[in-house]
Image (tube, rainbow over all chains, first blue to last red; front, side):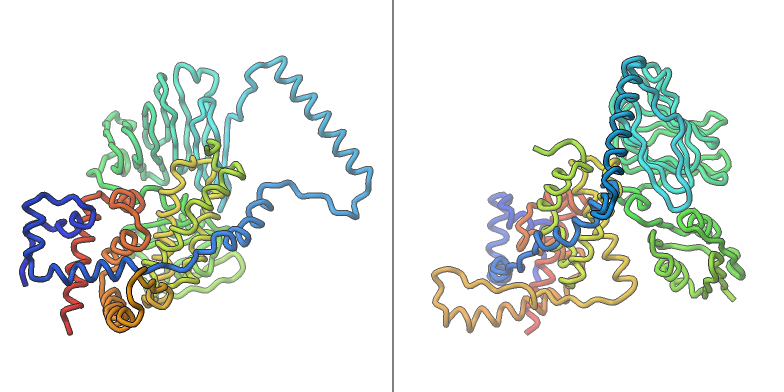
Length: 312
Length: 170
């Protein structure tokens, strides 16, 4: 079988990017007619209509019910509507009054999430913080123009607007400073992790040792000591996509994360020293347990809020 | 123009009608499961909606393809899927070709392609079909799959070499 001088030659033939010499090489190739026939045949393939409208009709009811405030049924008393309207007018009046007296109403200083919850906070400059479960962020908005500083407990994804003032995330396990970028910060039980999705970030541990991360790089410090940089392969953190992902992670850390995403208590026996590579989904406990336990050959039992996992 | 807020209903609707169909094709190219691909589209957009404050409209595409790619992985972990592209793809007779001649020769070639696509490694098949059927450029495919253009070109070249081997197997 005759090989090619370059392993993208056929691809560039199809996109019309071959040099004259390459074109000649290809056309003299004994299999050239076969390649042409494959492409001609493939180009006649067409997919059925994806039915976007039907899919939208199926999806959209679920979206509006999430955002819209519960609408009043026909059986409601008429006066309730008037009461609601009056309350709304009153609230608006109070709000307007607040604006009048205080031109920059104070943003909430602490935003926090509970088990299984995620929340987005918008900061004074339009930057956003997406919090994973059981996390909180404290926003120091009084001196925002000089220094954009937040304090994080847990795990969050930041999208920082470009600005003159540095943006600083403080955690008990280290801090991160940037000018404008997107990244995640996580500090849980001695493990400090920073992943950079866009731009450049600088991270430091309490002792002062610094790490500079570029896009797609990830840095981890364990008990204040930096590990070698690694790379992230995904364009978004898994937990924002609705699942937690692990790579050779000690099982007790996986269980800790499971307890943050589901309101359960895990009692594990015979799993010491085991590690897990894989993922579990949010919002579906049976599937999540199966995704962890079946590849590892563990058995589990759910009794109310307690999940017993056994490795025998 | 898109309103700069994924949570805005009209923006979200526009994103849906822009990406739902190509996303369904993308999942189908990977899994060969047309009905399952619809579920993956629904789930991907639901997760985008949940994160609509943190994902601006210009990043929605990357978010959707990433989620859909992983959803398929999850499904695949739970159940083996077989690739049956040709059951769903419609065969189009080229304009001007005499129907009888076409039927005889073209059908044979298409059956061969069908069998050859089955043999193709998934990464190559997805790139090949996104380019030839979805008509996306290498740059557009690279953006959606989070790969470099060079990597996409390598997969495309590899796909053709593999398909040729299957064609010559007879």
